[in-house]
Image (tube, rainbow, N blue to C red; front, side):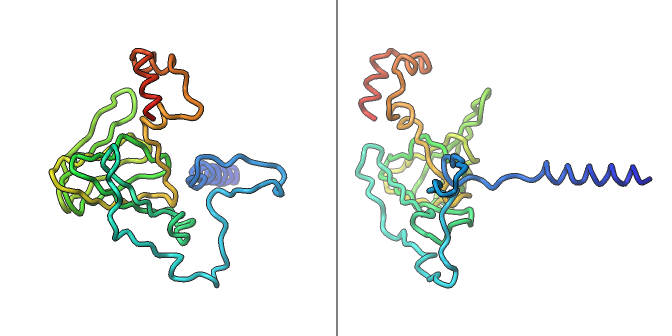
Length: 216
């Protein structure tokens, strides 16, 4: 009986360790150092004395539309820990996205957040692509008042298919969700990825790849 109780206790302890996990990282990486005197970043932000907190630490305005006069016809106004310091450690953020007629928020991912989107104005075609091997496109046309969810880490996009401006508010499950715009990252990396590698990966002529790298 004692050995049975001990075994159950050990199993319960092992399960508790196995089911525990580290908090989601709010930055791309945090390289460990042995000497804390040489540590200049933490996984998040340093905290001020709670007694010094004020309302402005928890507030930001997105009432003004973003400038959509750009090649993609959209503008993202981020509302993360950079804009609202009080979001630090709370695991949530938001964004306002403005679209010109036929503007788009091109394919991208958020490495640290699921996104939920609410359409305030306009008509959008939105979607995300599942992971390998199926790469299934899950998409829908959204109208004013509609809500759509983009799972964490999956490529997704939004396109204004209407003749008028569109506005959405997005909520994200990280204080600093990050964003990787696929075309910018692949063709605009610094230093550039070898165009021969990209030509083979995308099955394109290498000169087309070089032209795309110049654009980004």
